[in-house]
Length: 453
Image (tube, rainbow, N blue to C red; front, side, top):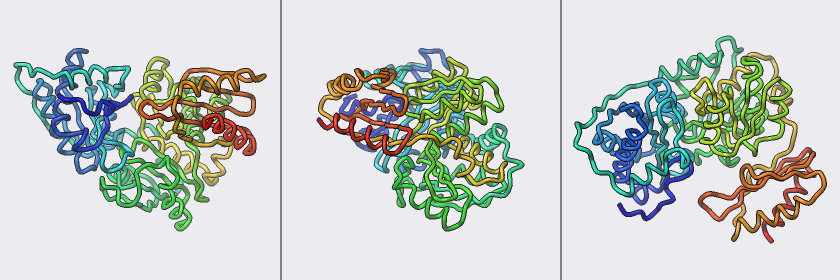
C-alpha cells in the first residue's frame, strides 16, 4: 500500500482526512494489521469496536471489523460510544478495543484509538509503530476461519459503573448546563444525568459530526462562549463542556467564568486522597504548581509526568497511582482501568458541589493559586536551536532550575515555563505560570521574544 501521508500515525492514535488519508481500504488493512499485532503479543482473540457520530465512522468501523475478522478475530460492535465508553467495554470485557473518532478535530477528519485488553493504551512507544509497519508493508491473510461479529449495547452498563465510582445519590438539587458540542456527550449524558438530582439544560445534544454550532474543542475559549452565556441566563450552578468523543471535560462556574483544568485536577486529587489516603497522584508537567502542593498537603505523593495520555497511563500502571490529571482536560482513574473519562471527572465536580452549600467558585477557590498563560503555539524554523538558546539565557540565572523531562522546563520560586516541540509541526508550545499576573506577563513576553529572535 502506498504511503502518501505517514503522519496519520500520531504519537497516541491514528488520525487524518477522510477519503484522502483515512479510507475504507486503509481501515480494512488497519483492522487486519491490528489483529496480526494482537496475535503476536498473545492478546485475546476478540476486539470490541465503538464509533462516534461522524458520518464516516460506520463505514470505517465496518471495514476495520472486516479486516480483523479476516484474520480470525471475533468482533463485538457496541455502536455509538464515547471514547471512555469504549475503554469501559475493553476494561470490563478484558479484550482489546478500537474507537473510531477524531476527537475534537473538524468534520473532515476521522481516526482510530486503539487499546489492548483492560483498556491499556497503544501509542508509538507501545505497539503503534508495529501496527503501522503491518499496515503499509502488507498483511498476508492467513488460511484460517474468519471471525464472527455480534452487537452489544453497553450504555447502561457504562452508566451503572460510573455511578459506583462517584456517589451522587445524596446531592442537593442542582441546575446544570451541558454543552455536548454535537458530539458523543449528547448520547451518554442523558443516560447519566437521568439518574442525578439535577435539572439539565442541554446545548447541542443532537449528534452531528459536521459540528454545525461550534468545534467540539472546549480547550479553545471561543467554543465555550455559548455555555458561559447559558449558565448566566439560566442562573445555573455549573456548566459542563465535552469534546467530540467526550473523553475530556471542562467546567464553567456559576459566574460564567472558565475553570482551569488544573483546578479540577486539584479538586479530584483531594477527593481521591480522602478515599484512598496516602495514594500517588500523577500530574503532567504543564499542570499548575498548585496540583503538587495540594497533593502534598493532603498526604499524597505527587508524580510529575510527560504530556500525553500513553505516558500517564503507563506511569499510572507502573506506580499504582490512584488518579492522574492533564492540563488538556484529560482525567485518569485507577478504578477505571487507568483510562481517562470526561464523564467521571464531571461527576466528581458535581458530587463536590452537590454535597456542599457553597457555590462552585467558592468551593474551587482553595485550588486556584497561580496565574497561567494557557498554551501558546509559536511557529519556528529550528526548534532545537531555539531551545538551546533559551536554556543558555535562563540556565545561568541564580535560583533557576532546568529539566528536560518533556522539552525544556525552566523554574524559579515565583514562576516557571515549559517549551515543548510539536511532534508533527514546526512549532514550539509555550506554557507559563507565575504567582502574580504582572510576573506572568513579563516572563511570557521575555520567552516569546526569544522565540521570535
